[in-house]
Length: 396
Image (spheres, rainbow, N blue to C red):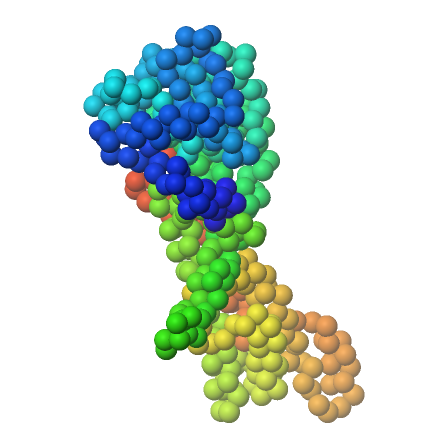
């Protein structure tokens, strides 16, 4: 949960004025007093219609302060169907017995400023470049209000400037919205994969052994998904968060299953005749070194055989790196007699075991598992392809 969301929750608890959001009050039950107070709370007013604005939009800037936008209802109604219905339809906001004041505090103020500049033909106020959070807010806003093509003349320049930031996992949630809204299927796939590889679980509420009232029982610890120290948002495009976490579980489950099945076979054969599948020279010492090498890599990270994917808190990327870094000495080192054997041992001391065990096979399997893209659902594919078709002339 980001700081802005936490602050909004705190404000909602501490201030009776903020308990109800006009945007979610059922039609016909608009709280006029609430809207009027919201307008009076604005730290400044921005006029988009040269003093003729007949509608006020209340927004919340990055500092948490309320601002008022004076805008034209005609311009808003022309811009998109949702706003036309809001102003002229059967929505509660469209009633004429209260001031035309609307709560837009859930939308990005900078993004809404850009949209208002466009629909009021103030093109000189539309920036030639925007920051990534602003473009993500624009994507959410144009998706929410069906304004996708409105920003088309500026879209390519905005996106091209920000493309170098696609590979950074912490920027992933922003890029998911941009890719979702503007039809960038390749970016959506790449970013989903990057987020998945960088997602770890953090304990946000420790386990409790008993309640404060002294009643018996336990309360399990609560874990939440984080990407590079930032909470993975719950408000991502349709199905994206669920797909990312499902892919993470798939990768971790494959890791646990393959590695610990390998260890189990090593332990079993260390007490029985050794097969060539685990040591080409059938040396028991080779099995013991394989077991020790694996445990030395796994135990510092708390990885145990009986674990479930939900018990593994590190990132899939760390698991892949951990597995790739395991080095098992050549079993030629276990020759114990003769000068030739000692020379052979020294010659192979630094070499890795390529012929014994399943480690190379498992490493290759894991690389294939982690490199497989997250499969889009039919609904996701239709949406992204529809946006791509809508903006195809931009060659994004």
